[in-house]
Image (cartoon, rainbow, N blue to C red; front, side, top):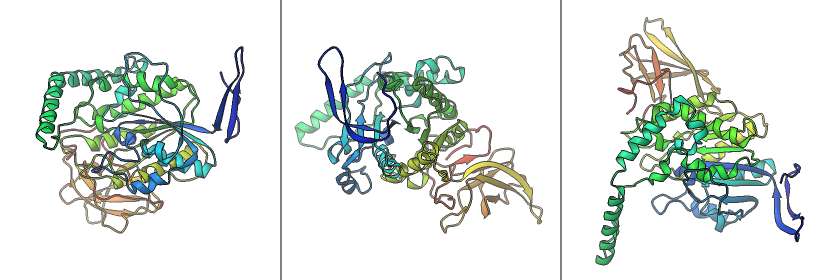
Length: 440
């Protein structure tokens, strides 16, 4: 059953009449629905993930979460071989009790949008920690795009690594029980992903498919950490672009806004975090998308940064522009191109040009984080000078520079900002990344 569009507002009473007795629904709002999805940083609730991983200003935020104009729907994690047709969860009003276990990023986004746009907002939290993007794409797309066949090769690698996992779980359970019996602390065990949650299309089938083709305002996406392995990172842009097209196709509402978070700064020396961040940046060539950069709010020692408020606000800024038509600048400095030029002293340099680069600054710090390389692609740290909306980068070690990059470490300690205080993305001017020297 479809209803005619109404102006945002409420609460209303909805009565459904038919052959049997009338069915009346109370406290109904008319507004905008946003679907928020991804892995654990989207799942991260207002109550945090325990004492070692709290939310910034946690108790204050929870106590202030009485928001009658926000409605929350938390979908229980589920993987499926076939598209599911229904869920077991139901909508709730946003209260301190219901919000504490709800996605913090989605909540802060919805709070901002509801207040600024004067419209009720429904938030659907469809997240599952520690999951790769290919689990969130339907088989309609994964099975019919040759560029995505690498996802199945990665699944095979994962399956081989997971052999004997049930025996490992059993042994860990025995260790836990022995510790309890002896009155000792429960030992910490390595994290083991649920094999079913890494099944290609499994989470699309179990968690996204039941909502197709529900009328929504747009998508929020915070994922990428699970795709930082060498077998997955190089084609993340292809995969994310396919996911965007896949969801838009199934929801049948054109190019719905797709707003995503670039993964943050975290000490992961054996993984390709800078590559994933750059791949996310490249996905902005897909129409009606925006990226919230989170480098400057990362936590070097915790994969789950506590400052979800800033991330939610940056997503809301993008939504105000893309979904609600506000004439605002919502993006940090974005790499456009790099050109070679000669200095009067005969040395060569690279000039980096940015979109959204008005007022480039390092917030009072020296310009750092840039590297430069010649034809051999051996990158070395370089000096950098801000000149208007460009940055001039050079090094005495590299006589004929051809490539330049910024923020190419898993941990990025300094950020480049524009006049709106929005940070720049990790980038490389290389068309493809050579992994022999790509990251640190």
